[in-house]
Length: 341
Image (cartoon, rainbow, N blue to C red; front, side, top):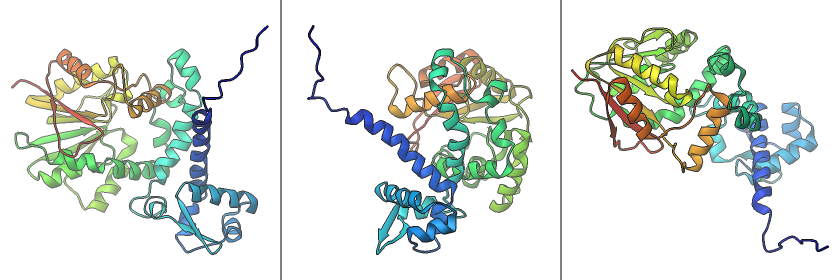
């Protein structure tokens, strides 16, 4: 009986590289957990010095640092280690561009859900227990410190979106509400560039204190916060309701519910602004595929969708939809649904 031999012309390196890539992310998350980059921001240190300061075993710390050097996150010279510029900018706690809050969210919320991807593919159900119970954000918002850290990162990552959308033509409107607008960073940016607008945020009640603290830091006393659940409570009346990175968190039935609620809340001649990656379809990008699978394991029926699909839901809700080209909006798409006057 003939025995097949492996095809030596094909290398398994790409497959093994994917596994190694997963382990590399664990190096980063462990370093952030122990505030290694914050410690190195105080000055160069040896392996032994860092291990003692952080309460770690020296052997493991040596390999951790070696891995971080290979990842380009740490630099070494004369037996001492320092932060690479990218780590100094984004991984030092207390600095304006600190991304640790988002990485903590990945470690505590997303990664455990991703561990159940095989089950979600079979059942179609999320692995995030908060989503199973109702709202995937409930567990995150139960911890004020984790909430602030997460929102710091979200504001940093979404700042280019807020800047791009604040510069579109808002002259035909006098008021807007950012639905799911968290602590108001997007709304603040829009009002800053369009002072004729009266802005507000609608989000879950636990976020009100984070909103008030953030507005105090920004010196913005004009924005208002409306606490509520957008599936249970009426949406505030306004000329424009904004849904930014909201619809992809929910299934189609929930999206239609939200858009119909928005139609009822809008003044005649008003509009709903929706921005999301809109990376769905039969051939999504890698970014779209990863985002879609994240929604599968973490949210209640959420998934990425196309602009064409959104046009259909908007029409069903009573709107006249239009996809709008926006300078500076690179990873997202803006679709406006207009309500007849």
